[in-house]
Length: 237
Image 1 (cartoon, rainbow, N blue to C red):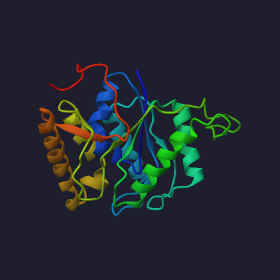
Image 2: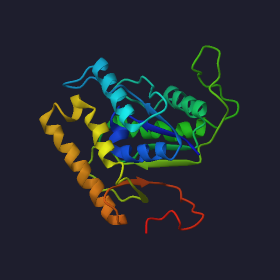
Image 3: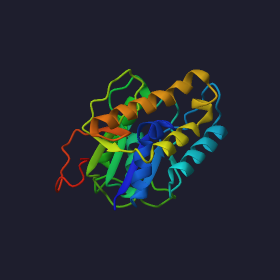
Image 4: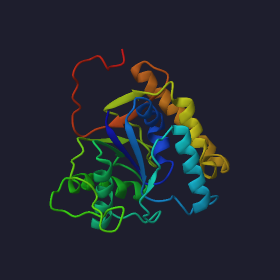
């Protein structure tokens, strides 16, 4: 089983981009931690307290065994800084993350673009043996150096971008719970009438990706590094 870290610029990005896969990973016994760079506020209908209620409800639907972690950067002002890199690298070390999921690098939202760059560099920082990183408690270290073997990009982009994934994961069984987790963010996708369409678009996109691999619903992913297979047993036939 693997230690998996899923990083999102705002609470709800992970659910939108790969909620079904998160559910599947947990069902398979992997140790999954969600890291939110910001609390996602302010928004027209939300508040920090309400947003926390929503991400807590969404985490319950996903079946997370660990509390989500909030890095605490400022929404709409995420910047690619050394401090942010080291904060994420510390989370990677503490979780001993072997696989890190992060947003696809092409996006119209500055927070998404900055988050991707931060996480890419944090992967490098986390392996440095003589780099002291912030711990959870004063005087406590962040854990042993580690270099996550895989960076895998999920699609949750503000561009009208058509995904061209490296691979897709079958989430047909997990799709109803994914939609339930997305709808847990009532201030984002239920109360604002114009945003209700996002759920429909999400189902259509995951349905199309499913059709590409011969299943009902699938989530697309991109990698810059080639994936290695021991055989074809895991391919969807």
